Length: 268
Image 1 (spheres, rainbow, N blue to C red):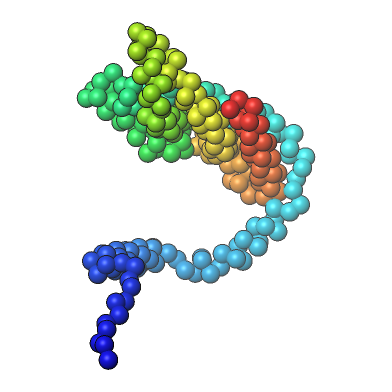
Image 2 (cartoon, rainbow, N blue to C red):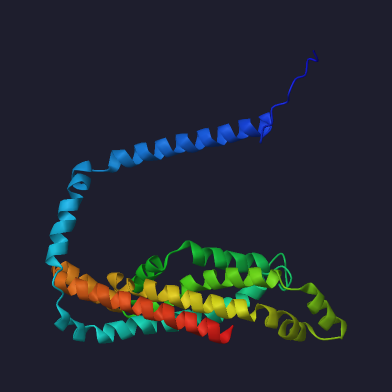
């Protein structure tokens, strides 16, 4: 008889298996730790009673007070204006910042690019509701604070996606235009811009779609729009009015998604 030892196939090497075990152990330990912290600050009596509270509030929200809808047209129009003007302002600022942040178009790797990346990170790290809260404290309540809050939030989102698209352009096309003796501005206009334009348009429309949703809650901190009506109705426990506001917001979001999809298919 031939003594043959059959090798047992394994997907991972012993070192890789050990690394995976350590990673899973750390993940489980972290999850247990987070659950322990959350459990300390959670009042489970209210959690257990939540279904009863939800059922009670739901019964008060029905039937909706449809007559309240006539008071929502102007706040709803303000919300759309906040999203649209804020997106337009944010996109206008984000476009040049994206060129400053991209490695292949920035005029300075040591000064301009770090500043542009800092602006992008600052914009993306702060939610539009926090921007609105800060701006209302500085400028007072109103639509202007909401518009600027949406713009400040949009800058980082649009800039990041656009500058990544700039860094992925076909350098052969850019080099061909540069070889003709074109200036840097002409290279950007004819070599880079046509390649990133679909991404820029799609990103801008997508951001406007997101801003429609975010604008609906800015009124909770005094930045105008339909969120102000939502806060008023909830503060006086007018739940049938809250239902009408929810329906109005849902309809607006669905319509904005349809418009955004149609615009993307038409322009891209």
